[in-house]
Length: 324
Image (tube, rainbow, N blue to C red):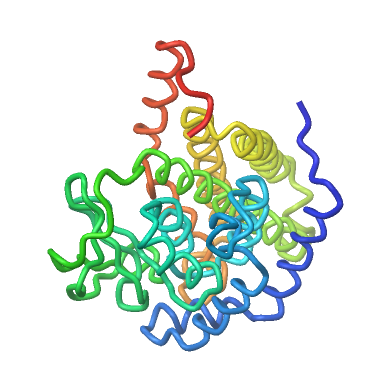
């Protein structure tokens, strides 16, 4: 089955790509990693103005959603440029805020980019809690507005800064739709990983045309061609799964897309690192920003094992609910 974007979706992707390319995201990522979010906040505002966060917010709260396919289109471009920040967590927060009073107070600000939200499932770290202005914590079957956060901890991806949220805080909702929020978060993560993988592949293809050994470009070697072809096939196999799952929003479909896209991006990262050689290991080289992102996304919002288990469970039970 072929999933082709319509003209409007393609134009949306091109406009995001142009905006993000002009923003010089490598410098934004490095500033964000060093604890200076000024450039990242400015970029966040431009992403919001483009309507990305509004895609997850219902029209009743000044959004244009829910539009999961368009959200996937946007997150492929965000991944392609390795944009930092709690992007996925803001989407998940928008899905969780269903209680009318909390939704009316917070969702319009999420859609407009006025606030940055992060979310910590029970017992886990929140992403970029030091930058986010809305800290949401899941406590048992309750959704709370956390009063603060603990010290910042570094992760494998320096641009993913982790914090524990302080306990307590205002109760926003009881029994929030956690499974639905997780499905949306996994879809956004899958699309983001696909974009990361595509960027790594493009960068590596360009590099092997320039790097020479024995007087010829290494891209002319059969072994190199095979590695790049394998990466290309894995990413192209993941693409229809991502957009197909955005159409169905079946949790098992999204889990399959998530594991496939993240594994493809991670395999492409390993190929990129090998073909770049020693320079690929240096933090000063921009490639590292995408390599660490691919590795971090692989386990974000569900490890490969957890996603495979959900797919298997759905197959055994006969498919389950077709939308979440």
